[in-house]
Image (cartoon, rainbow, N blue to C red; front, side):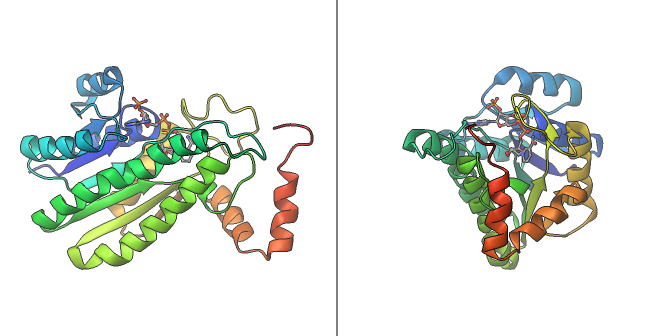
Length: 250
Ligand SMILES: NC(=O)c1ccc[n+]([C@@H]2O[C@H](COP(=O)([O-])OP(=O)(O)OC[C@H]3O[C@@H](n4cnc5c(N)ncnc54)[C@H](OP(=O)(O)O)[C@@H]3O)[C@@H](O)[C@H]2O)c1
């Protein structure tokens, strides 16, 4: 019987391309997001099963997990590829913009993780992949809400990987660099090594299906320098960060 993947944020960008890649490899793929139209389009083009959902709605999340299990029998793999971003201005920490980013990007994942872990324990195991970002490797200037939410997601994935192994639940961290999607389209700064979403989806599917490693990070030429920066002594680290702040611009 085909394995079942549930991809949240599966209607567009990286999530949609991962859904296509998995469905091309014989998986049954359930997709969620708030907008029904892109989910319906994937249903037509790739046989995905649409489950419209807003991850900020806890009751709806619980009901959707129950519906997927009722319809498809189990959830072998859950991929959380949801994110929103608000432009947080340099040096400003207004609560509302931070709360909305964290509510979707981090707490949204937690709303999903709890019932999915319960289901995976019940069925004897499974796999959970959280799409974070290289932007979570350290606190990036001009991107405080997004970067700090992703950093927390990395820590969460590390904890879960350790704790859930004994339940036969493998936790994976996905760390993309810049990928061409609706999410990055408004960016007004250079995006080095920008990758097509299709390539990102293929790399994620390959990494999940052909390896057991914790982190699937790409492209390497972006990932390795950033990991090195994260290890620098703070004086050097902050000297580099300061250069990312364009003078007179927020
Ligand atoms: N693109 C990049 O350069 C890049 C780099 C590193 C990491 N990432 C991460 O990759 C993931 C996917 O991003 P993307 O680039 O593919 O952008 P995207 O196409 O905008 O994907 C984000 C998805 O999240 C869904 N979403 C947003 N709020 C939601 C909510 N409240 N409930 C349910 N679904 C919600 C959106 O669908 P609806 O609007 O229909 O709800 C959309 O499908 C994100 O976690 C992002 O942080 C992206």
